[in-house]
Picture 1 (tube, rainbow, N blue to C red):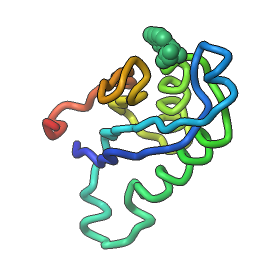
Picture 2 (spheres, protein in one colour):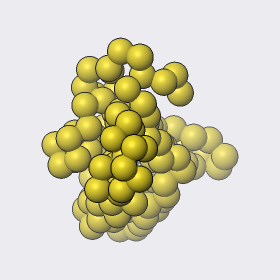
Picture 3 (spheres, rainbow, N blue to C red):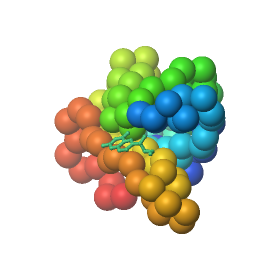
Length: 124
Ligand SMILES: Nc1nc2c(c(=O)[nH]1)N=C([C@H](O)[C@@H](O)CO)CN2
């Protein structure tokens, strides 16, 4: 099993526990590793046989950009559920960074894995 990745996907959203955070938008940054057997796509050279990272990107931009949350945990779980339920991805590692949340230049957030990591998945 192979990995399709999307790194540094920056999306503006409304996220936070404080009232002032609920009045503004700020960027969050997603790093995704998604298990995908690329053999069929590599053999056919057809996007229909691939995990289309553009489709994943557009879907997450819509979900994150059009909704609000308080905790990074909530948003991370929602994104992981979309990947597994709508795109049929068996395993995903998702890092959600809320840059600057505790101070300039400091990264904070959450790293979750969902699903059963298939054996032989490329280390990443
Ligand atoms: N585990 C978490 N801790 C905190 C979160 C969060 O989403 N998960 N959020 C905040 C505030 O919104 C902070 O980001 C801004 O002051 C604090 N702790």
